[in-house]
Amino acid sequence: MSGPQSGYPIFPKTHDLIKWLMEHTAGFPRNQRFMLAKRVQDAVMDFYECIIAARKVPLRQRAEMLLRADVALETLRLHLRLCYDLKLSSADQYKYASQSVNEIGKLLGKWIQGVKAGNESR
Image (cartoon, rainbow, N blue to C red; front, side):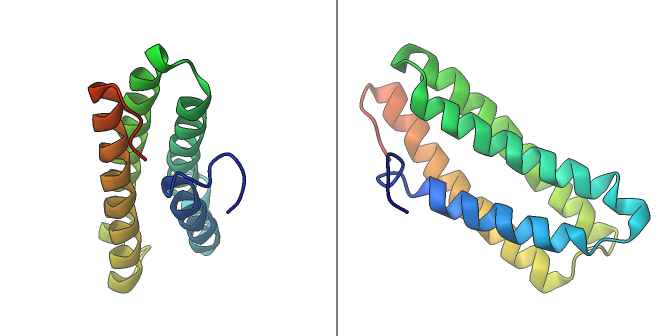
């Protein structure tokens, strides 16, 4: 990924997860597409919007935006677990999504630590 976010590996990793989740949730049964699939999609998009905003807002507001991103990521994590528990995701699909969310979470954690320490950690 080139452009202003190229120094932030969280952006392409999040993009890849969004793409995968959109394709995955499109295969949910009709009755779940309008509830749980939408919740999963909303959570991942909320997360993405928060990290985009965190990159753009003044430094003094960045920690708050990253906290919002952390909440959205935790919400996504819980929704993914529910998808697995309801057998909407296979064990392999859940493993892939969980690993992706965990990796993104580690990147987010480093970014938060960098902001708290007063230096931008990517």
